Image (cartoon, rainbow, N blue to C red; front, side):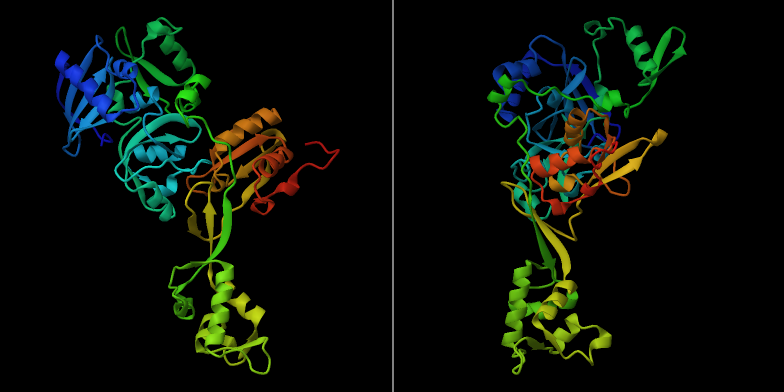
Length: 460
């Protein structure tokens, strides 16, 4: 909504009666806020302005600005918090998580698609279609966007996390944000604006130029600077965690991963008698039962040798190659079943504890551990595909940094869309092995590269 510049119609100080009404509206819209929190959000004496504007698509929006920062906006008689407000009250709305690479798309006006969601260990928040939700980034509790759920949580999981998940209304860094961004230097350690600007420029966070005599202006900001991107909201204290149930992170539990098979168009005739069609997902045992029943029902079991199955035209078209159609007339049971499974499309089902199963086509990529050489011939350990197993790369990096006493970085994974990789200094495969196998209890078959651990007596 605020991805492009808007037109301001009016900007006036709020009246006493309107201030009281706004407090009542906030209490109704956000019942989880206590009386003190509502008074803090809508202060009684501080300056509070009502800004009426027209968004770039013509929508009439009312924005409430406190202390120079937009705190709320109203659209079609519905009240919404801004990201500034959510930074102060990060648990105000159910929060969904996405990858840092997605933020740029949201700021540009895109909606959040379900493939961009990160599945937390405790599962997705439970919401209904039309519910207002917050969106945060992996590794940072601070919400960066608000949106309306395009479907319920149950529908999201049933869809296999495909399609549009949220209609995004407002994001960090959109045109509503520049209406705020005020900093009280006197309350900081810098005390003076000149000292603050000098320090920020030395750290290459901003560029300052004297555009007119005696007036310094900020002409550029490096929004990707580590000092900005690494800013996080402090975790709630133990006292607040007991008050706000569920605010703490849940322990990780590995997902149940089950291989499946998907019926392609070339196999539909074989499976339609059992009530399945193109795109149906089946377990291996179901495929076996269907093939056996098909052979028996159509009298295809060889009368002289029960271990052989005669091939009718449908079986020939489905599993026999063109150069075999005049030579292969019968097949043993195990060969018949193996060929059927080979012709079906691979798929898999992932079930996180307490969540509905998610079914996807293809094969799940294993967690990939590799070793690489960096500058000065230094060895590093790189681990990819953590997200597919519900693991947060930033959390894994933080744990490994502490245990290995080595530097870690999280970067985009080359060639993988919206995926991250963790890089740890040195050969840390032993630590990764213990973390993934022993603590997270992930099956060894879903991890590749464990053999790269240093041999006893050898330098890492």
